[in-house]
Amino acid sequence: MGKWEAVGLVAGREVKTRLKSKAFLATTAVTIVLLIGFTLVMKLVQGGSDASVGVAGGSTALEAPLKSTAETLGQTIDVHPVDEAAGRRQVDDGSLDALLVGDGSKIVVVVKKDIDGKLRSALDVLAGRLALNQEIVKLNGDPAAISQAVAEAKAVVEPLEPPFDYNGQQLVMGMIAGVLIYMSLLINGQSVAQGVVEEKSSRVVELLLATIQPWQLMAGKVLGIGVVGLVQMVAIGGFGLVAGLATGVLTISLSAAVGTVVWLIVWFLLGFFAYSLVFAALAALVSRQEDVGGVITPPLMFVILGYVLGISILPSDPGNHLVEVLSLVPLFAPTLMPMRMAMGGVPVWEAGLAVVLVLALIPALVWLSGRIYRNAVMRSGAKVKLVDALRAA
Image (cartoon, rainbow, N blue to C red; front, side):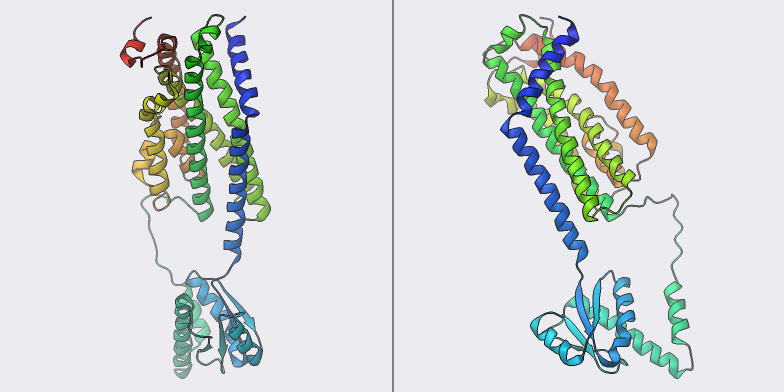
């Protein structure tokens, strides 16, 4: 049997076993359902408005000014021309949040009990505009021309460096990418460690190592679970992308959305193989499932720390320099870089450098983890010291 043929057999066994497991099917299905549910919630949130206002009589002329005023304040107000009597009934039954009445020269609002603070702010600004226009007319000025001049007046900003264009959708996709990477590394990485201990404690490893070499068993297990994780990531990312585009929640270009999913998969593979090699080696040091958590906690903390830093800093400060530097470090890159890339604004050289550094680290991890695994996996009973496992068998 060839060297890689043995690796393929071990990997094939892992793929067949885990793809049929109820835990894998349930986890994948639940994640997809949650992602689609999140998409539908975002659709409902985006499709709503801050208030619904009726305009009656002379106040119907305020429809356009009210909408534009709300937009400048970051609000969305639905305005409906109605008969005053019908409008008052709609305010009473809750169909309308407010009704503007009168001749339109000033703001007169009919509400059921009280008025929302954000709506009051918009109406106060509109009232101020009406008062200003009236004073301009008294001075024989043109309110329309002056309003246009005021609207076109903008502060001139001179950045020292070109700013990155972040939008809300990119931020959300970055957060989703971070969560998926974190969960996948956490679940699949620990599956590798638990599988190693299971085979060691049941003495199955002794039978397997009678026909294949230790590094082939370790590589096959990591490769097989990696393929299962890849299938899961493709399914989740694909369903999430289709749901976002189908509902109209994602309005960014198709190429940008697909690029995010592709990079999500790439960084899952890089992160998984790097961390799983370490998990497999450290798990070989113990013989009981109860001890797995203790030996894999130190490297697992880097996964958790990268995720926590990204999820807590990037939403409010996408260009944070600390996160930018850490995303190039191989220990943090699998969690931080996909989040930054999903948000956009990452220079090509930074993304390329991060990939190269992780790829350069993996061969070293293969050698180091293979040595620890080979020297520890056949020792049952008490926990094997890491120093002993690093020595030649």
